[in-house]
Amino acid sequence: MSYEVKLNNRIANIELLSRQDNKVLVSVDGKEFELDFVKISNVSYSVIYQNKSFNIELIPANGGIKRFVVNTLKNSFEVEIIDAEAKYLASRKKGQDDDGESVVSAPIPGKVVRLLVKEDEAVEAGQTLVIISAMKMESEFKAKKAGRISEIKVVEGQTVEARQPLVVIEYTDVE
Image: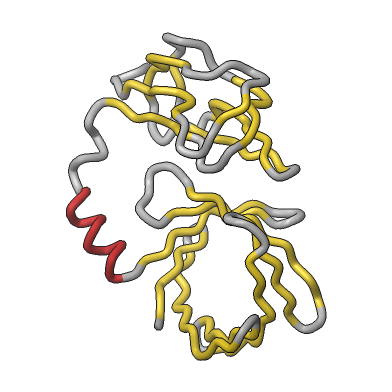
């Protein structure tokens, strides 16, 4: 089974060569890696590579079919898995992204640590809207495009469930 994985602006070809219990052999752009891979929870994994242990948090991201925010101890990356299903769904979704409104939702249960916008406030693409704390890590949720905050559905300190709407953005020509 092989995938294309987009990490920031780089696309890597990843192939699952074998799997036996926790032992996984993968190929990344032709180079093989033997990993000990354990799923700890719905969004966190423990990976051992060459006797080094890594904890990884994989959080579904807004705005993509198979897009994730990958958090490690020191870094955070945006990752998109591009497989046949993702390509098909993307082609069907094409043209529906600019429907004039977008809801930013919590990918996992957590607590609203900071709410950085107010209703009717203009926002820029990439501007941080809300910070959620989950599993001892804080994740920022940003505006996909410039627009105006039409509704805020949470308050600071509120506990939220997975997929719960946080902020609604109305895409307009904001200057």
